[in-house]
Image (tube, rainbow, N blue to C red; front, side, top):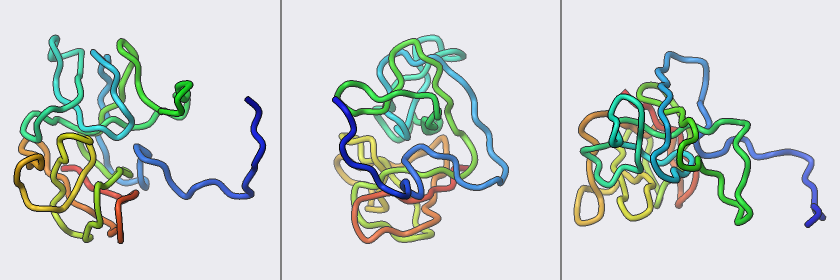
Length: 151
C-alpha cells in the first residue's frame, strides 16, 4: 500500500523516545517474547540476558526504549520481536504512554492490563513499581504521551 497523505512536520515525540541529554542508564537484553515500545519489562528466564513484559509493578526493572531502526509490523505496531535486542532504560527520562490524565510530579504506577503508566492510586489492576522509581515530569489532560523520570 502506498502512502497517500503527507504532513509537513512530524510528531514532537513518540513513545519510548529518550528525552534530553541528561544522565541515563540503558542496558541491552534479548527479548524473550514480543515487547512493545515503552512497555515495562522484567528479567526473563536467563536473568542476565533476557527480559519479558512486566506482569507486576514489583517485577519491573525498566522500560523498553525505541530503537530508531525498529520497523512497524504489518498491523502498524512498533515492537521488539522475540530474540531481538531490547534497550531497557533503568535511569533517565523518556516518553511513555499514559492510560489517563496525569499530573507532573506524581508517582507513576503500572496499569497491568495495558502496560501503560498512570498516576492513579494502587488498586486492582494498578500496581506500584518497587525496583525502580518512576515520576511524571510532564502532565497530560487525557491518555497520551508524557515524560517520566526513572531512578
